[in-house]
Length: 114
Length: 110
Image (tube, rainbow over the protein chains, first blue to last red):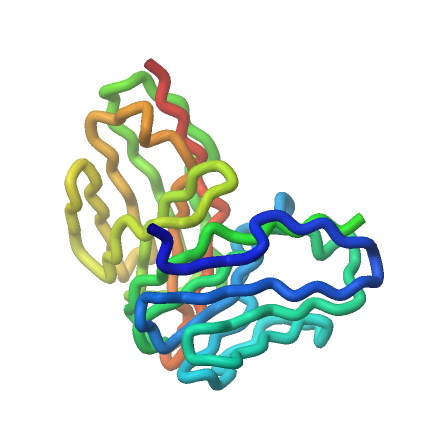
C-alpha cells in the first residue's frame, strides 16, 4: 500500500511541450521533495518544500516549477521540454524537513522526451 | 561541490556470501542514510546511521565521521537482496538537501 503516490508512472512527451508530474503523500509529513535520476547522473536533489514553502532549489532552469496546492501535494510542472529532461522523477517526503530525517520515496515517474 | 563516492560500482555474489559496500564523502557529515532500489523501482530507506554502528536484521552499517566514510555489510546474502544500494548524506547544516552516491549494483546468484 504505497503512501506516496506519483502519477503517471510513465510519460512520453514531445520536445517543446509541457507536462505536470503529480505527487501526493499520505504519511502526514510536512516536507516534500523532488529528485531526478537519469542514466548519466546519480540521483539529484531538485527542490524541497516544508509546510508548502520552498526551502531549497537546486534546479538551474526555471522550466521546472513545483506547485503545492495542499500540504500533502507537490506537483512538478516542466515547460519547454527537452530530450535531456528524460529521466525518472522521484517525489519524496519527510516529517518536518529538518536534518536527520528518514526520506520516503514514491515509485517515480519515468519521463521520455522525444 | 558536495559529493558521495561509492565502491564497488557492482558486485556479484553467490547466495549466502557476505557483502561489504563502501561510501566516502567529500565533506564532514553526521547525517548518513543507506537506501535500496530495485531496477526501475522506488527507493527504500534501509538504515539511518549518523555515527558508529547500527544493525537492522542482516544489515550492519558503520559510519566513521572523522574519516568521512560509511560502510554497509550484508550478511548471508539472498537472491532477493539483488538491486542497487545507495548511500546518501545531508550537506551543510540547516539544509535538508540529501546528496546521493552513484550506487553499488548487487547481484546475488543462486
